[in-house]
Amino acid sequence: MPDFSQLLGKTAGQAKRPEPLPIGDYPGVVSRYELGDNNRNKTPYLRLFVTLTGWPSNFTQSDIKPDIDLSKRQMRRDIFTTPDSLWRLDQFIESCGIEPNGRSYEQVLPELVGQPVIAAVNTYTSTSGDTGNQIDTVVGVNGK
Image (cartoon, rainbow, N blue to C red; front, side, top):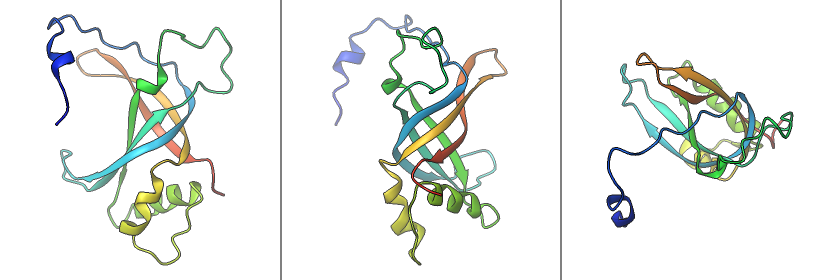
């Protein structure tokens, strides 16, 4: 069981919302994945969790925010896994340089963990007016 004592000792109501990242193509790594269907329409999906490992290569020094620790920014991207959209998952697997060789998704998906990727990070504004980040696309860097 995780130790929450450090979190529970902090003063409630004073947490600050993280500053959104600038839009760009960030290098990262797939840190884990999960399967689910807990969205509004119960559409099954694969959720990729991406840890950012650096700033976009086209950023200048003035674009980089030194007060932001990218390694603590856990981003995610969902890929639907319906029969009509599995081709997108196949495309992502191929972009990571993983060859399915007749194996099932159950056998192939664990190989995604640790794969280097480029995550196209964008911003969004929620209906309540809050601004945050999302990954629009994610592609592996080891594939074709």
